[in-house]
Length: 261
Ligand SMILES: Nc1ncnc2c1ncn2[C@@H]1O[C@H](COP(=O)(O)OP(=O)(O)OP(=O)(O)O)[C@@H](O)[C@H]1O
Ligand SMILES: [Mg+2]
View (cartoon, rainbow, N blue to C red):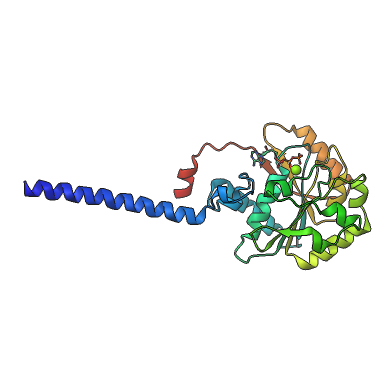
């Protein structure tokens, strides 16, 4: 009888220990994963919330690829564009900027929202930043007034500002060249989110002033011919495509298996 009681007690202790272990793991997880409720940042900026998520790992691979482009010639300023609308440029640019800023050497990263037609960087970050690139380029505001931060200290943002009458002309101006030259001295990486190239010329104009273009292509939507045409338009504008990012890819490997492989 005594033996059975001891065995039951041991089993109960073991269960308790296991529960404690599970609780400890949960506690550790909450240290890593920021509570979404505490932040206004859009939950799709997964690199902000969960550095260990499968998708964050994918952005880290992108970061490695982008950093390895720099071996021969520094690719300090890159634009993110796509052929057509809603391919995932802004979400990609934001996640990539976060991932770059999280690199071990903590580089200074600037993300510029150069989509002055329907820019959404500030919206995805959950901030009400009205002054941005359009005001700076039009001479209505200073850079100091326009640059802003969230709680990632080595990551700075420049919102798009109000929709101007002449976005393409503003982006093609001396003011834009001066701004980029100044920012190059102050930051290690500058990522620039832009509108799609097939509908407007803006990304060609900005792309020509930078070291390269990262093309976002939405899998199973954008057709090859459209991407080809987009690349031709960028080439004509003297903007050089340095890589492609496919969005909307489906993974069949469950995330929890990937994490513990
Ligand atoms: N890697 C991804 N996989 C699947 N869906 C994605 C991915 N990245 C973004 N999306 C989705 O694509 C949609 C458009 O995202 P986003 O606003 O970034 O696109 P965009 O190309 O910047 O659009 P626009 O042309 O209006 O500027 C959103 O619904 C977003 O959730
Ligand atoms: Mg966008």
